[in-house]
Length: 132
Image 1 (cartoon, one colour):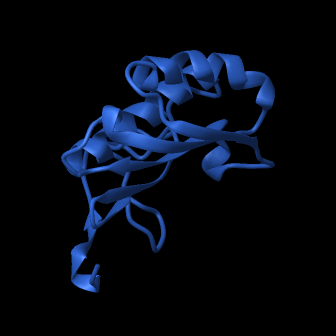
Image 2: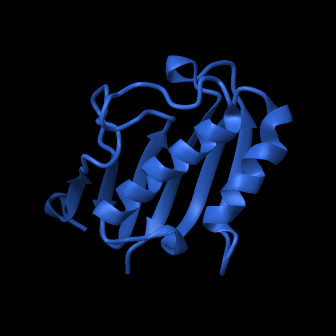
């Protein structure tokens, strides 16, 4: 793989990056998606008002938009990391997560509790997808 085969992925259907990173990077046959939090891509405002289920739905909607921009879909995801402020939210998040990733071969996954997430989010999810 050469540097010219590494490309940034960008879509207006997901929140714009707020720092020196990309929504995703395509490298060879792989897509590395940055973590998504529950931001409305049109307004930049947080979605869910602290409701972890509403936040999770928006996070997965944002992640799906990034995947689509790269020509992929959730069935191509091979690995996710779920970051939660409170592991007591695991069951609620997992139920919504399974709607997106519960068919076919579910991705390998890690789920961790963290001290804080950007903008006070209760959940963040990143992923790696196979494009080939």
